[in-house]
Image (tube, rainbow, N blue to C red; front, side, top):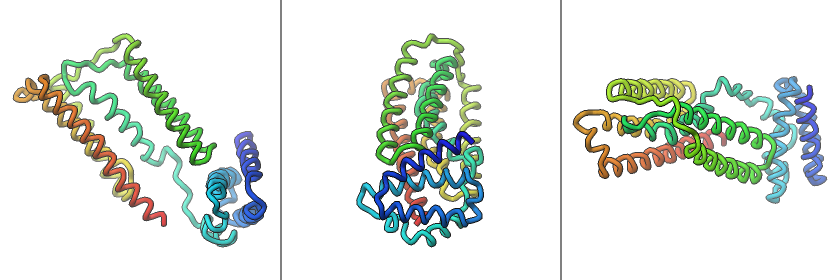
Length: 274
């Protein structure tokens, strides 16, 4: 109940930011939404009202009326929202795994491409802890601020995470060293890549515009570089300046692949939402 009461207070405070025309529209919209069976759950209603009110306030700031932004009168909009499927809980949505995998591909795996470089389990644990704290803060502010506030907040969080990880890399002692050897490391990396690929394939069958396939290019490029560093015929090359160049180019290509594939997925999602 305390959680609902907090959301109700937030909604009341944001409602005061509306001008008289938008406030009248909003009050009628709330009444109409209560008539929808989907919103028999007060917690769901108040949560959706908060998200929607954030958007209406932002639209008002940009000079749009609530009716223009939502595309219809209160009754029409309420019926449309009532018919929309309720989002799955986060634990039933694999999209949450994507930031974790991007963090792993960008931070953890590049450090173990060369078999002579050990995985420092203590440092890895701290890095993941910092990442989870950053994600928690990001989710918290996303539900409480407008679009501009979210953007600024996420930028601050990302910069803070990078600084904290840089300090951790310098200050955390080398503990729990694990070497991904030529044979064992190769098998481990291949199994990891195959599991993530299978999961992405399965999710794409469930949801065509899923985010998880966006990381596959980076995953397999990193895996290929690590395997090259472990194969007898190419391992010598990977410890030379040419190998370092190859690792650098491969890492950049992996990052670019995430951006390109992610952009296409985002466009497909935007098109579907129209």
